[in-house]
Image (cartoon, rainbow, N blue to C red; front, side, top):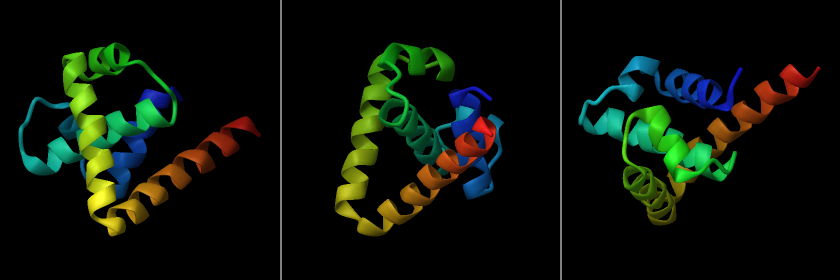
Length: 101
């Protein structure tokens, strides 16, 4: 499974929202946050470039830059957000380890 699909699958599963909703053009706060989290993980966990992530989400690279900054700020402001972000990171690692077997 590609990192893009893996991150989307885990984020959507963790929050009970469809993959399509995260990828949609919707501006609903719930979907925007999850989209930002997925972008953040693709940037920080996999090191993908802003333009590459932007193409995948059908956005501009500056939108991805903003998303990464927003998630970083959110985690600094609210430590409880770090908990669920770590849960998602752990789920990604778990799937990656199982794929390697």
